[in-house]
Length: 563
Image (cartoon, rainbow, N blue to C red; front, side, top):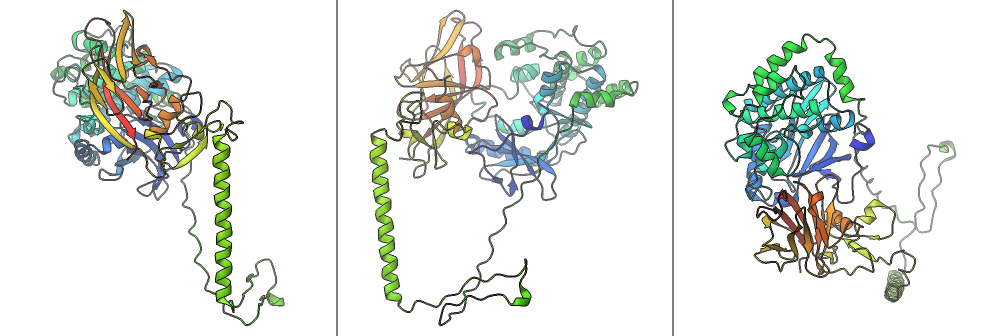
């Protein structure tokens, strides 16, 4: 993941070109709160631009918290933090900009090369602890410290997204009572819904370092409820950790927050041991890998030249030629100048006649296209019989058989036959679909979900229902004929065109086994009337089917037309 082509992805059709004056050069990724892009300051310094998801941008509570936390984050100044340099909570959409750190995340580095050696672990621990000192000094608690929020620069780690998770607390992503944070890296008091303090981040620091040392989560994987139960009720097994780290991590992982080490004590402990190993810097560079080649800033397009003044009216057509002594490769060229039309009425008649002929040709062309399309002439050579569907909100269209990724992301077909565009697939140029969020939805074996109106029904007659047919198999099932379900793979941040592409793919079906779904997974739905839904999973509990505690909770976004 430390290769330029992997890190810097090209902008997609639904990505903006400019955000608040920052010209976007590439896509860096996406998360639960929005997409992240590479841009540059006026001086050419690379920055990461995070654009908030539309569903959150419509939440007044989120915007209030986002504004407060962003103002607090502006005051954080630390050697091991990615400095927040700009942002606008009232923008459309809201956004923020931090200095870009050219390096992989800790999660990517461990996935690529495995657990880190002890000297690198000490440097990692000291750097992250020092970052927490800077963050806590301005009254911020990170709340979501984890390997993907620690970037590995050539001169040490950088902690990102500090304080921003607080802004999401209470939004649709936490409306069902699920606490902010990633289950595998939560502290016991956080998992139990108790008060969150600076000591909470210290517990997450120890879990993050343990992940870097082991290559896996300290409390294991599995359903979120199982992981959280182990964090709250069991002591961690530190026997597999390097002996040099066990005393420090044991103290940081104390169940009582008051018994945990402070970030300052962690820094001092690590620095004492780093002083005994002069080769730590070399080891760290081996972990971070080769430096990235950051794309250059996107230059603005040149402004169109101002129109030349009207040429003088002459009695006869005249071509002005350059003088003999000025002829050469850089000599100016002047266009011919012509006199005014001596018969303006006849000229106007000519123009009207030409316009009428042109309009007639266009009408005949449109009629011919409609007749040929209705008889299948245009579809006969496209393969698979797919029609053309317009991209909602973009006003664009694409051939369903086009090899380009952008074209495949626009077609909303289910995989066979021509696609009938209706409901949310109506003409986007005249009536772009509207995204409506429905937070706090809950599905178990007594409830179901209506896609069209985002309603959680207290019976089993909705479009989508949760079922555990066997002891070891739970799934989502489509009960309305024509409804399709498709899981989304890859990074989060799915939009309308993304859902259409997944729903048109081979993975779309009427049943989705939940064994492949985890917390944070995204699922696309399509109603036969054309409505598209995106369900973001907040909590999944299927460890004990038929136990009465199997369920799925999350937030639904539905795209529908304005009519």
